[in-house]
Image (tube, rainbow, N blue to C red; front, side, top):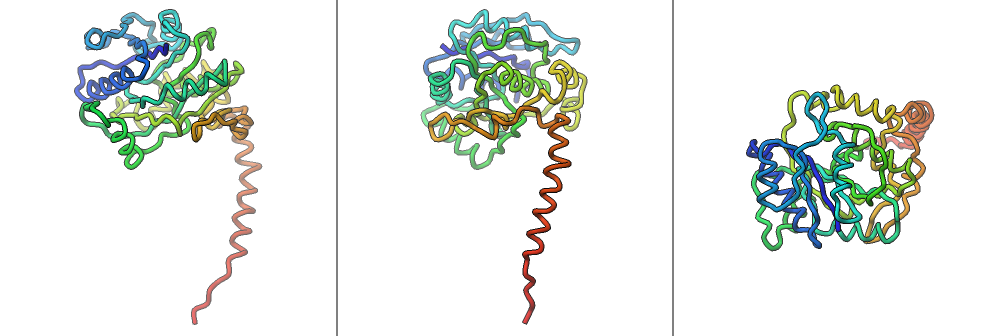
Length: 298
């Protein structure tokens, strides 16, 4: 059995309520039906758990800003999980029913792994009908209208029970906690699997609080603390560091990702981009410019 767990926001805001209910309903449609755990005591969470018959854990450790701490949430989810696989997911993510297929594929080949993916941003204003064919309609719309999120963004993490050991108190839902987890998975010797091509997940767009929008998303006290807890920007990975990808129904080794052993914001990476690759790109561009043959007008 798969255990899906999340820390939703309060359900008092109409749009947040709609997108979180959409996400929750999509999780419960997975077959076999997963165990779902919602953490926190925000407005409406308890009532939603009763409505959908899912597990509610109201008490979680938070920082001084009231943000749930990852180590406490992950530890409690693991202690409550009835199966061997867990999935932390952001509460605004709709997942397709083939998530299980990708999980089974990876689990057949790897004992220790972290499977994640990049959702597509999509405007969703109303509750989804979840009638026959809903999934194809939504995915087709996401592929046509949606925008694939950055490789820096990983909105769901699927992994076997017992993978992590002791985790730092990262602020969940704040920048860099996901990048820190991608790095830690690699350091633990687990296969880091990018399932973006196989799992067409949907991130339902929503506004962010003013202190977390724009530049503030990357530059706020909680994000900075997540970097400190990760022990530096060199230990922040993106999905470009995935050792494997799921493509065309197969789990494939990703040599370029495997060779990425430091984060893109590390001093080493910046040195390579600036002093090694930079001059090579300049020479390459000049070479192309010299090969251009001017066309004279008759």
